[in-house]
Length: 307
Image 1 (tube, rainbow, N blue to C red):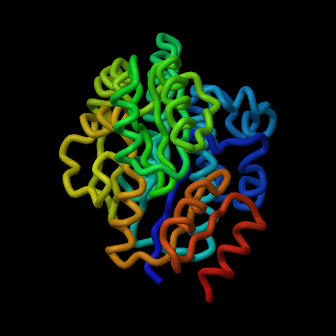
Image 2 (spheres, helix red, strand yellow; image 1 turned 60 degrees about the vertical axis):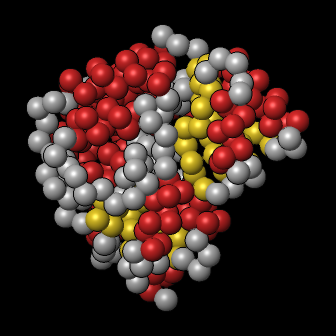
C-alpha cells in the first residue's frame, strides 16, 4: 500500500481527546512538554479538563487539535506505519508540515500559537458564519453565493457532495434560504467566523509578518496543498503561502483526487474524530481509510493496513 497521513482540522475537537495516547506512549511526553512551554499552559490538562465550549474557542481548539494529531502521529510511527505523503485540512496542514520535517516541533507550536491568536482576533472583529451545503454541485453553490447580497463565498471544497460556505452572518443565512428553495440541505457550523475567506485578511497579514523569520525545510515526502488542491512543489516562500492559506478556500476534494491519481490507496487520519476518513470513504471507492485517535482506533487501523 502507498499511504498518506491526513491531519484533522478545526471543529473535530472533543473533551478528553488524546488522553489514551498520551498515557500509552512515552514518546508523546516531549511533544506535550514543548507545546505547554510554547503555549503557556498545561496542554494535557487542557485536553483532559476543558469543556466542549472551551475547546471550541479558536485560541484553544487549534493548539489542542494540533497536539492530538502529533500524539496520533507518534502512535502510528511507534507501530511502524510509514507514509509516502501528507495532507491536512486547514489547521491540519501544520501537523503535516511537522510530520514531513518542514517545521521543528518548537516552531510548529509557535506557528500554531500565532495563527490561533491572529484568527481569533480577526473573528472577534467581524460577524461571520459558516455552513456546510450537502448534495449540491460546487458550480451551483458558487453561483448562489455570487448572487446573494452581502459577502458569502465557498470556503471548503470538502468532497463532491459537500462544500462549506462562509461570509457575513446575514449573507450566509440568505444563501441557506436559497439552497433550501433549491431543495438542498445546509448545516450551520458552530463557529462565529468566516474562515478561509477575505474576512480573515487581517489575520493573514499579521501572521505572515510574525513567521517571516521561521525556518521552513523541504519536506521529506510528498506534501499536498489545500491552497492549490495538488502536490506542492514550491516551498520558497512559506510565510506567503500560509498567509494565503488563511483566507483562501480549502481544496480538499481536489487533493483527494490528486492523491488517488498518484497511486495512494491508503489514508490514515491522525487526530481527533474521523471527519477526513469519512470524506475519503465517500469520495474514493476502494481506498483504505482509517483514523487513529485512541487505543481502539489504533488497533483497527493496524488490522486494516495489514490486510
